[in-house]
Length: 78
Image (cartoon, rainbow, N blue to C red; front, side):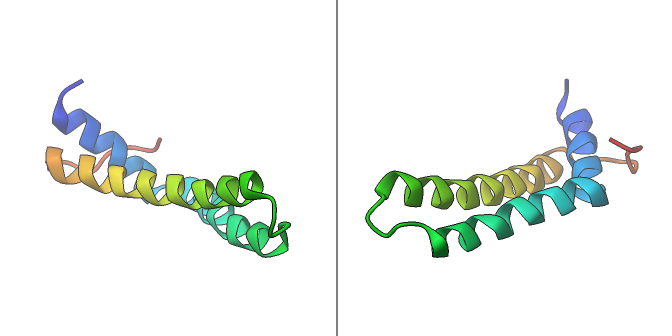
């Protein structure tokens, strides 16, 4: 898969409302769960913090793939 193809696939994920809604819900639920987590349970705290980080990094990677491939045409649905 070349950079343009990867870029097109990344654009389709970024522009897909359902995939963005899912990521939004995952990211929103983690801090909410963090607030209710036992403050002495480091493993639980780390899990919720990691969830936020993964979603943020995934979105950053998607934008990076788009920028690196600079697609010449708009992709179809993912």
